[in-house]
Image (tube, rainbow, N blue to C red; front, side):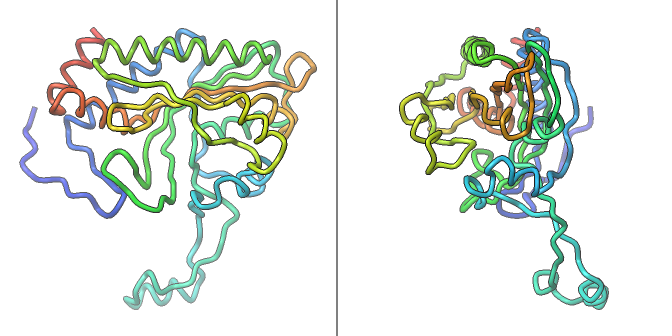
Length: 277
C-alpha cells in the first residue's frame, strides 16, 4: 500500500480529515458496533441526508435543541450572480428550504415510520453523518459533522427497557475487550419539552445514560423515549402507542477514546483488529 506523504489539514473549526490509520479505525470500529444490530436482529437501512423542519417541530426539536440545528439553505438568484462575480460568500443572502441537516441518526428513521403499525417489536440500524452547531469544537471530541451509528427499537415498554439492558451489556463488554475504560452516567438530554411533566418525570427516572471515557468524553449512549415518539408520530405496536429506545455510538469519539487508551492510532488499530479477529 502506498504511504501518504502529505499532511492532511483540517479545513476549518470542527472539520477534520482522518488520516489512513484513523479512517481505518473508524470503519473497523463501526463494524464492531454492527455486532449489536446483528445480536438484536436489527436490519441495516440508510437514513435521509436532510430532515423536514415540520417533522422535527412535531418532536419538540425546536424547544429542546434549536441551538444545535444546522439549516439547509439556497442562494437566491441575486446571490448566485454576486458569487459568480467573485463577491464574498459570507456576505450573500440565503433562502430557507424548510430542511435541516440531521443532528442524530434516529430522527430520520422515526419520521419514516410515522402512522405505521410495527407489530410486537421492531428494530433498525443505520449510520448517519450528523451535524451540530456547537459553541466550540475540540478535536474528535466535538465536531461540526460526525458519524453516529444507532440501533433503534420500537415496541413495548418492557421491550424498550430490555433493549437498553442488552445494549449496555454489549457496550461494556466491547469496551473491555478494546481496552477502553468507561463510566456509566445519567445525562440530562431529554427528547421533549424540558419544562413539561415529562421533564419532571425524567428527574425521578432518567431516560438517557452515557458511556464516558476517562477524559470525560461521552462516546455512546442509551436512550429510553417512553411512548413520546409513538404518540407524536402515531406509531403503534400491536394496536397500542409504541414505546421506543435507541443506542447511539459516536464513531469519531470512539476513535478518540481508542487513541487515548493506546497511545497511537497504529496501536489502537492493531487492538481493534485483534478484537475483530
